[in-house]
Length: 186
Ligand code: ZN
Image 1: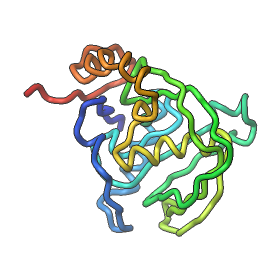
Image 2: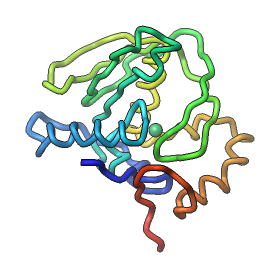
Image 3: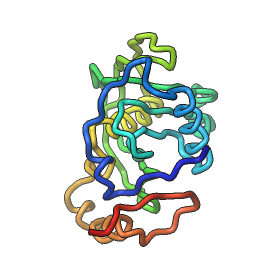
C-alpha cells in the first residue's frame, strides 16, 4: 500500500524517533509499504517519520545511483534502531533532495565515512562501515530519525533563500507527483 508522504512542516518530521522491538505491530507489512511508497515516489531512501511514524526505521535502495557508483547496484537494506557511532574522512558536498521537501535541492557537506550500528529486518545487530553515496544516503535517512532535515545543513544564507519555498510546501502549495500529507491549518 502506498502511503502519503508527510511534508515539511509536519511536526513528526521534527521528533526524535523511538527505538522499536521485534514485536512492533505489523512490522513486515509496514516495511513492505515503505518500499512500495519509496519506489512509487522514485526515492532512494525513506524514513518512518516521513510516513508519520516517529520510530527509528528507514529503508534504502541505492540502485538508481549504480551508474555513478557500481557498488550501489542492489544496495537495498532495512535499518532499524540505527545510530552512527563514528563519522570520519574528508567532508564532501553532494546535492541532496528529500521526498518531504519536493522541488528543493541543495548542496550539503557531510563527512565521507560512517560506522553504523543497526539491526536488520530480522533484528540481527550489525556494525558496518559505509562510504561514498551509501554513507550519504544513510546519513540523510539517519538524520530523519533524529528530527533533522537536510535543509538544516544548508548554510544560513542559502537557507534564508529557501524560507518562502519551505513555507509554501508546509501550506501545500507545491507540486509533487506522489501523494503527500500537509500540516493541518491552525
Ligand atoms: Zn529526506
